[in-house]
Length: 374
Image (tube, rainbow, N blue to C red):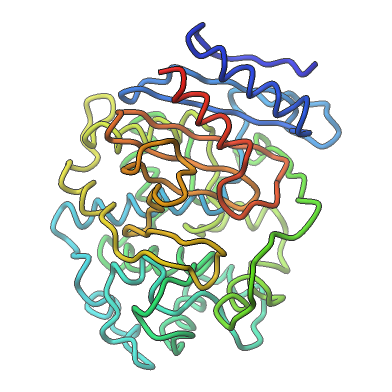
């Protein structure tokens, strides 16, 4: 039996049972699930191992790579700029990033870029996968690129490019990189173990990944999907894992604990404040999570409702039973969500990756059990 530690009051006993079953029946390696009510952690379970040799316990200080769950954090960072009146969702990206207007993209709005409607899901032409480690070069290539599908005609998930689009929009307005602003404005003041761009001093706490045993099921192949996931250069490569952790990619390489994510999302579930500190107004949350487009995504094989970077819960209901919940999922199984209707939030992280693109069954079972215990 895997040793399970952490916080779990009797009313949430079912959550503990499901968490344990993920190890006993589903081959979990190391994982953590945190659930908050009104921003306060009420469940915080962890177990298993942080390494593939099963020698290091997965504990409260273990950091886990978030992959695309990072996008929820990036969406919040941009939402704060909008909430402060420094940016508008309906303004063209080229207003703050003039070079972006090339190749027919002058009218692409901030909200279209954040809701995966800009047609920039990846690079279709041969590209050195090490390019992703050069922020300015990657942004220049995106700015010069022609869209892979008509702008605004559909969503076509931008698995890696989203981070450079959101991050460069943020940098052009704020002057700082998104990872720096996250650390200075939110993570450090609130004591959240949450990073975009991980300092070398923290690398020893990162859990080792066990890659999935099979490829996800992508559905019918199209140019947007090929560029996003199926080219040899679709994701960063050619550099060490330390370099990958160190660089800032706000779509893909956040690192955090589940508790930090659950608390951050707790602010979005409770009107925008955490520990008495306002991160965003209720109006800002409403604007960020309003539906921008819904329909069959060109890259992910799902019908998805997108806010301005947030994945809305309906119609898939991966984040509990409430239609108004929202969040994001990451490659391999991680997720973070907020539910303003119920005032709850949560996060799941793990180091054995599954094959579900979104809605990993391990996380879905835990979230369902948590809601059933309310």
